[in-house]
Amino acid sequence: MTTIKHEAIPIVVKLPKPFRNGWNRIKGVTVEGAIISIDPVAYFFRYENPTWLLCDWDGVRSNLLDAQETTETVVEQMTLDYIKEHGCRTSDPAKVLTTAYAVYCHTFREEYLEDPSLAEMGVTSRDLRALTEMGTMMALNRVELDGSIGNVGPAWMFGEAAKVVFDLDSHEAEKLDHLYHGSWFNEPRRTEQIKAHAALGGRLVHGCQSGQEQHMAGGCVAPYGADIQRFRRELRAFRREWIERVRSCGR
Image (cartoon, rainbow, N blue to C red):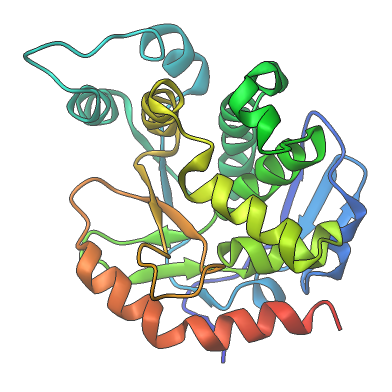
């Protein structure tokens, strides 16, 4: 069942580079080169609050990315303070996608492929593209401060959506999922992504945080202070249904 509580205006954005044509397999998405069109009614499983908090990416890049934590202020507090000072609400999903694309192009950039630890893991340019495109689409998801999930679409189910869009087998999807869930983020890249996510108004929260849970439940950018326990309860209640709906796009 899809829940739409606001007028669902079609989303159209032109990004700097073309997206993979495999996005056309996801219900509600049309990709024509760098132009992405989304029908919210068809795409979203839940679309209750189409507003987002953003910070200007150029400002984040110039004023926050090189900032160092101190004995007085840790990187998370520094990032939260920046969001409080510079965050602005928007109801323009195209702006969200444009900002997210910039964030993830930076976070998953090609120069990191020279890192021997990533080379040992077999990380490729294709993996970086998948991480960037998935992260961009995931930015339209939304979690409220009370922990309730306001917006969720197929890209939330990161690994399952990547299988459909990028023709990945289970092993390849699991590798991508492991990268997203932490193996990409050594300490320098972890602190970098915390600061970079200021542009998206929050912090990266994963849907899978226990070895007893199956992966592929993705995650989202949640506001600082969100009730993560409620978020996880709500995700647990719906994740099987949502994962199955993503899988059906590939059949």
